[in-house]
Image (cartoon, rainbow, N blue to C red; front, top):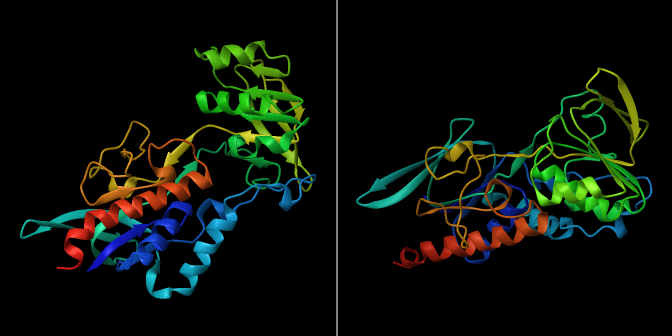
Length: 307
């Protein structure tokens, strides 16, 4: 039986695993890949890599360490986590897609989240080539550029506002017919460099090596082409929390509820990164959350480690 199993190989999971190894825990990372969202980098024709501050360098070091320590990783998706008791002592079974059943005293869920996509022609082809899903990460790169944001909820509004501070012009495309009731949205409506399109729908993304234009259908069915140096799909994230659904408390969007120590509602299960209800889906935030989760798990395990 393992002391700790970390589910997920992104920034939070890699950090948690390396911290656990350094605490001399018998730990196993279980994931379909290593690196998570850091495997994707936004390419832009006017930006060189050295101009971008990323969490990639930190994550890459942890990734390299785990690639070297083969005994500490198992490359397979996880289907479910189950809780059991033996003589009053809780433990968990991690069920993998291939039918494996891995037993552990504690679990960290760090499975990230997947973006809601448009599923229109050109979207898949231009992902991370002028089109991406995180304006909050890349907004500073679009100084004096034309940008376009797609989304109806607060995330899209927040992204458009972030871009409006640096971009020459921001176009916010919303399928809803009514304005969003928020102070930030009201501010966007008054911004001279922001255009909000209501009841509009993106139908295609076009370009050459990079995404260049977005085809948008208006309420009458007319299609207009908008030039955009950067296109951001901000329709929200779907937490990858299905393996603990019904076991720990989730919010209405499926995010795992955690406290300031990354503890879930079930003792022995911890969570970190984008799969939680934590603030800001940023790489460096996930790295810090992964470290906290590992330290909390170590403290949870400590009474039984040296018995």
